[in-house]
Length: 112
Image 1: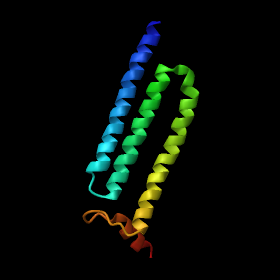
Image 2 (image 1 turned 90 degrees about the vertical axis):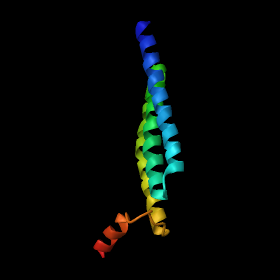
Image 3 (image 1 turned 30 degrees about the vertical axis):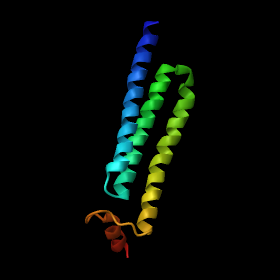
Image 4 (image 1 turned 135 degrees about the vertical axis):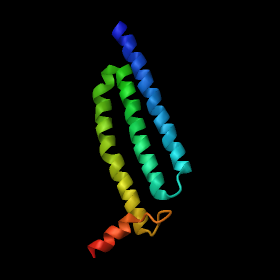
């Protein structure tokens, strides 16, 4: 009974921490200057936030842990890949980063 109360409290703390990361990721989408920074802020913060929310849920409801673990694995594989595809599509569409930080073009020029 004491362990259950501790896991519920720890789960709630982890859950709220994940929700805070999700909120900061949303704020980053609004505040960042260009599409590449927005992709970065959105992907990293929402991946961590969602993982923490799922871990918190698994601590509160241990019977769901296997299903939540599978969701976490799927999320860890798809989120970084989708952000890379979005950044590549933006670069191919001619969207330039703000400032002089177009490292991808320099790398592509070195290959030719």
